Image 1: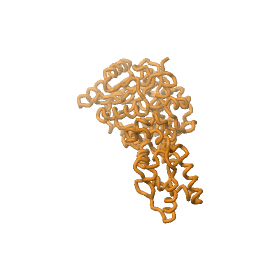
Image 2 (image 1 turned 90 degrees about the horizontal axis):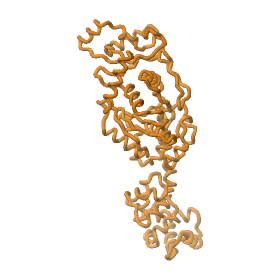
Image 3 (image 1 turned 90 degrees about the vertical axis):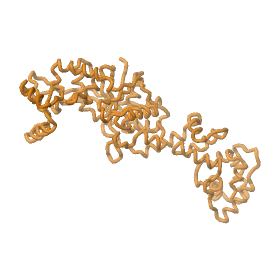
Image 4 (image 1 turned 135 degrees about the horizontal axis):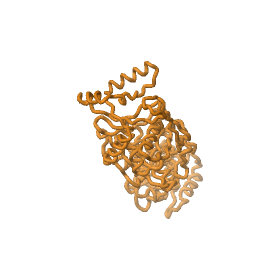
Length: 457
């Protein structure tokens, strides 16, 4: 069997790190099983779905390193869903209902007062032809419900089947259909809700594994019943835990909270996002993976906890620093050129400063310091100023090599008696204007003797 997975968001907003978790779980599962990844947009909600959101989702996925094998839009596949509806009607498992939202709400309240679960009572199944004709003459248009299966021959009996499956993440799962209303598959205006297009597409596209958030566990019971009603073998389901904020709040595309776009604009590396999105809430240590192939080696859906995973944005910056500190120049070169860092000094500069960066863009400030000197020259006491004058008088002649810093500070120590912080801090402030930063032994050759002397107070 060829493993085929899909990531199927609705294009109603920009995806956040929680959505990225689902996309990455599917991508890595496909990668580990030499399978296919389908990007499918569940865009049957015409009013809220927008192409600009679909485009931004694809851009975000590409930024993360996910390149779908195919991209599909449900809004372009309505004829396939129409055909499935006719099959369900012929099988008498899709039935017309004429209740208004107000009538349904009243019935739910009545059932609650009687101590019954507030599920739909299947009253529409008992309508006479005369009642249907009356509704239609009043201008009511039906919505269509899927008749959930049960063990009895009488559909009005409350006893229904339990749906069981072996979840890829959670193990053995059961959903009792008796606790659910027959789901509406088709609205009064003929448009489709999520359930039918999703199942039909999974059948038509040969989806073998459905990996998604555990907020869909109950939906899965209904969907397995619908797969069976359409004569199809259900895929393997896996439901991973959801990401929440540190305070336990859920993430939403509509609010833009922790969107991939905002993280990217904040200078976070894609592998920092991917590493945290995949590994948080699992038995694996959260560490920065170099690329998705590396991350795939640490990915096991069964290692995911059943409880929600709290996502701390501060952890992203920790991972980001790790990636910065180990990023080869070849990987950073083109991005540095865009930032104005180029030429013969670019590589030694990068190797000198990368260990002090939180984001790649932070390199710009250090490039300016190396190229132009401190942006705001430090102020020194009279004693330190005298010390610096003496120190700069001892600056070695060129040519310089990798030992120039050691040679220079050795002479200073011998001449002035200063050592430790008293020696190094005034020099650092004079050369960079900053109290901390890259090793001066690495920066000094970049400055050159002339550039170093130009920083003499």
